[in-house]
Image (cartoon, rainbow, N blue to C red; front, side, top):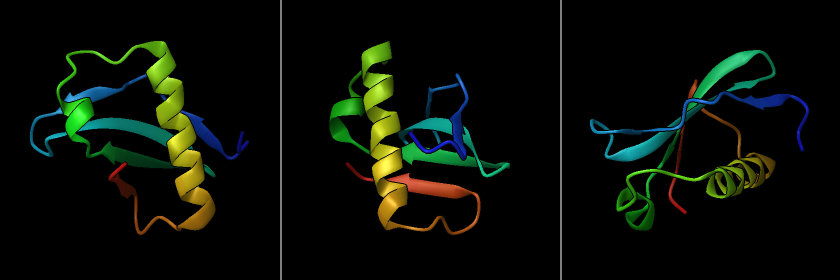
Length: 76
């Protein structure tokens, strides 16, 4: 786990972005992460196991990419 990345417990569906939204602290900066996925969009709620999977996806994304600003859009 990346110690500079701390996820908040605020995963919810964002109607405006049509995606699940999560916030986190990345090296002290608050970032917003959007997950654009047809499979996820069908869910009313995301369980704890799936949350951990999404966190892993973000960590893998950050290994290969740099966030531009305070928003990340992930298309798994």
